[in-house]
Image (tube, rainbow, N blue to C red; front, side):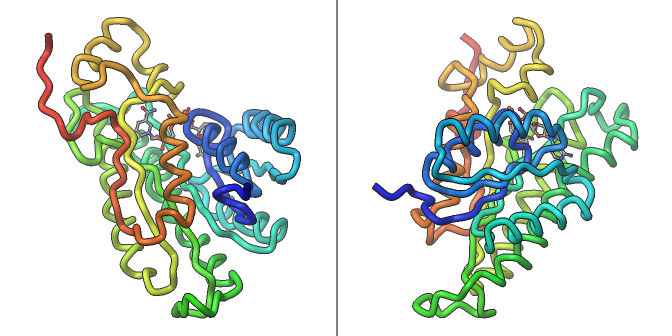
Length: 273
Ligand code: NAD
C-alpha cells in the first residue's frame, strides 16, 4: 500500500518535541522524506534516529535552525531542495510561549519581540522560502497551475487562543497566533492559482512540554480541564494526524482554513461541575 505522502518531501520545524516530533514520525510512516528542523539539535537528531530505525525506506535530514532568523530558514529550505530535489510540504510548527509573557501592563518589550520573532516572523519566513522552492517543483501539466510550478502544502501552527480570548494572560503569544491566522488566509488567496495551499492548524491545550511546563501544578491543570468538553488535554499525535491530512492530497480543495483540533473547546460554552 503506498503511503499517504509517498514520494513527497516535507520540512517540519520544531521537529524535536511535541506536535513536530509526532508529525515527523507520522509523515515518515506515510512515505515522506523528512527534513527535521529544530533549534535543539540533539532533540532533532533523536527524532531522526527514531525515524531511521522504524522506517528505513525513507530518508531523514536533520538541520539545526532558529526559525527566528531568516538566514537559518533560507538555509533550511535550501538543504531540503539540495537533498531531495523538491519541497512539497512545509510545516511551520515551531513556536514558543515565554514564561514572562503576561498582560499588556506587565509584558516586557523584549518578551514581546522574541515571541513575534519566532512565532510570527518565523512562520512568515517559512512561507516565503517555501513558496520560492515550491515554484521550482516540476509542473504537473494536468493541473494547469499558474507560475509553472507543481504546487505544495504549507501548514502554519496557530492556536485556539487566536480564536478565543484566554483569561490567563499571555498577550504576545495570543497576538502572534492571531497574526498567523490572518497571514495564512492572505497567503492562501495570493498563491491559490499556483497550487500552493496554506492552512492554519489551531490546537487546543495539549499534553506537551510547551504547556505542561507552564501548568506545573494540579490546581493550574484543573483550572483548564473544567473548560474542556472532553475533560482531557489533547495529545500531540492527535494534531499530527490533522497535519497529515492537511499535508496530503486528501485536503486538495482546502486552503485558507483555520483547522481546529481542540476537543470542541472553541465551540462550547462549558460550565464548571
Ligand atoms: P514543544 O515545546 O513540545 O515543541 C516545540 C519545539 O520547537 C521544540 O523542540 C523546540 O526546541 C522547538 N523550537 C522552539 N523555538 C524554536 C526556534 N526558534 N526555532 C526552531 N525550533 C524551535 O511544543 P508543542 O506543544 O509541540 O508546540 C508546537 C506548536 O504548537 C507551537 O507553535 C505552539 O505554539 C503550538 N500550540 C501548542 C499548544 C499546546 O498546548 N501545547 C496549543 C496551541 C498551539
